[in-house]
Image 1 (cartoon, rainbow, N blue to C red):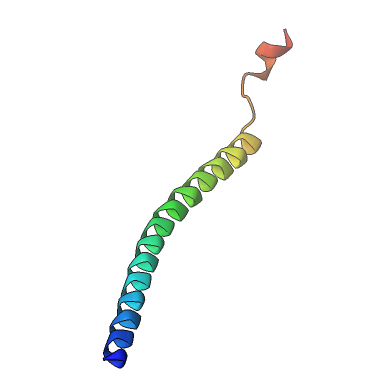
Image 2 (image 1 turned 90 degrees about the vertical axis):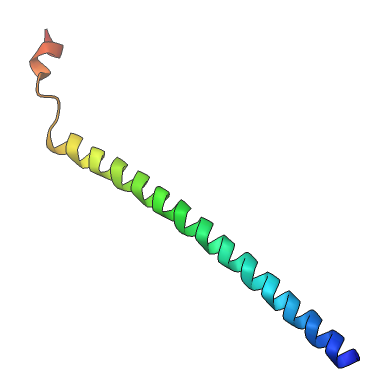
Length: 62
């Protein structure tokens, strides 16, 4: 009886841990995708502004 109870307990804990881990990785993947997208956009904007500075600079000099 002890072995059966111990086995079921271990099996249940493993199942719960695996389920929690899989949910964590689903959320992590979604968050990292958003984070990567945000950093890529800011990096793109930075390079765009460096390459093409304000074209109407003369308007600010007046």
